[in-house]
Amino acid sequence: MAVESFAEKHLDGVIALCQAEGWPSYTANRSKTMRVLTAPGVTSVVAVDGHEVVGFAYMQSDGEIQAHLSLIAVSRTRRREGIGRLLIEEALRMAGGTRVDLLSTEGGDAFYRSLPHTAFPGFRVYPVNRSSAD
Image 1 (tube, rainbow, N blue to C red):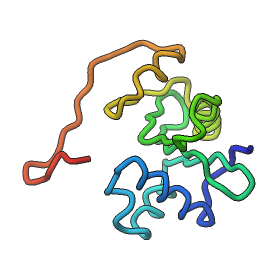
Image 2 (image 1 turned 60 degrees about the horizontal axis):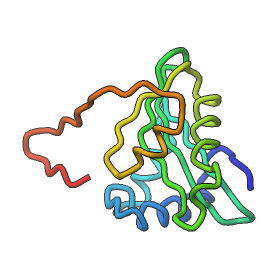
Image 3 (image 1 turned 90 degrees about the horizontal axis):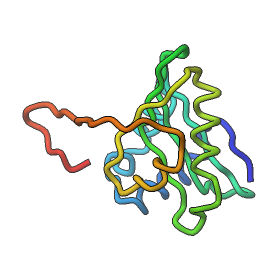
């Protein structure tokens, strides 16, 4: 297994992982998902085993101090193998920064607590006329 920079050849695998997690924002429009994962200031990495994408992480960073883990997913059949940790470490190395902030709303608390961390409360704020479904 290797962790590498996201490229268009990985898009179907990333979308499949998002579909498995029930994240419609990343499955509805392939072009939009590609633009998000390759936007300026974004570092996206994938874990690939053979030709299969088994995990990915999407991080935003100022390149110096602050990074934000926006999204991470690991195939349900490959969890507890250290893939998530490798994805976070490689994304931060590539993005630059000394720390990662994140929101955990999908039940990943036990995983994040296994990493060196400080817990803070957080909020996700939406525009007035938008659903908070994802």
